[in-house]
Length: 162
Image 1: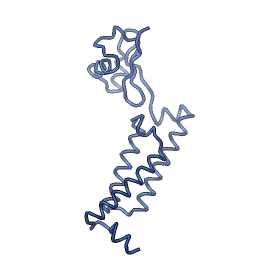
Image 2: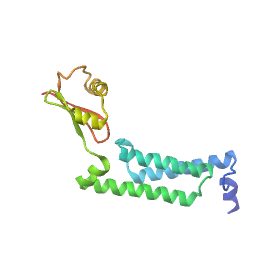
Image 3: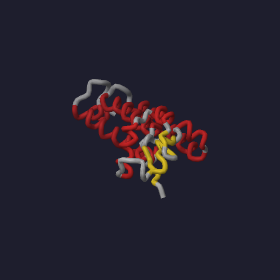
Image 4: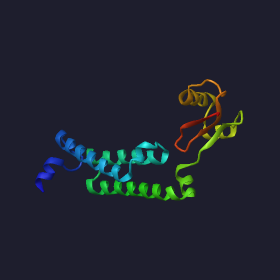
């Protein structure tokens, strides 16, 4: 047990080697936790998925600097990941839960007119909407556009006219 204290230190008075060893272990633990959470955690970039990323980084950083004990902190992170995984699983089969956790898409443009109320709710300005058009379909006008949505993950999507 003495060698563990020598390599990983104890408390907040850590040297460079001890913090480096803790960082390597925290990296491996984080990688394992992200594998448990699933690939979607980084693919969707929704608020729901960003919460787990931010929380893991914040909490596990405390392990590296010795501000929190390793095992309880790691178990707390595992609890976060399992709750994330469970809610993602439930929302996959339940639209009500999915809407509550991930939100809903909203139509910003349809039938030749902007939906100002939905734009206001989503805090999307005309300039933001035009940026979305340029990025998605390389257009400066709505001539080619049937509908524009803000998706659950916050991205603007464009449906072109047929």
